[in-house]
Image 1 (cartoon, rainbow, N blue to C red):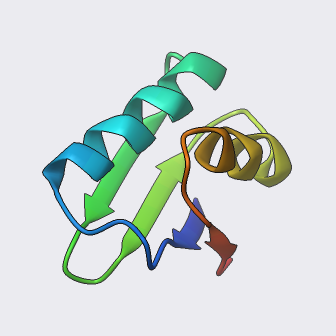
Image 2 (cartoon, rainbow, N blue to C red):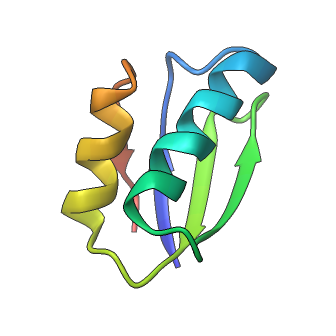
Image 3 (cartoon, one colour):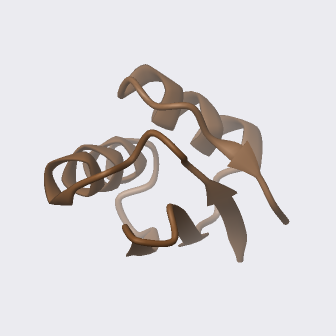
Amino acid sequence: MIEFNVQDMTCGHCAGRITKAISDVDASAKVEIKIDGHSVSIQSNASADELAEAIKDAGYTPQLLS
């Protein structure tokens, strides 16, 4: 499980954009988002760097937690 803190994710629209960006990298990824906690947990075969880059490309600032 790869976890990011994304402080600039503030709403459902943000969560949808991040989920889509991750799915574009790994269509089989499992994504769990907690908007109020600004957390994104991902189970994926993609690397943390690839996932972070996808989140950045969607316009957000991910911070790797684990």
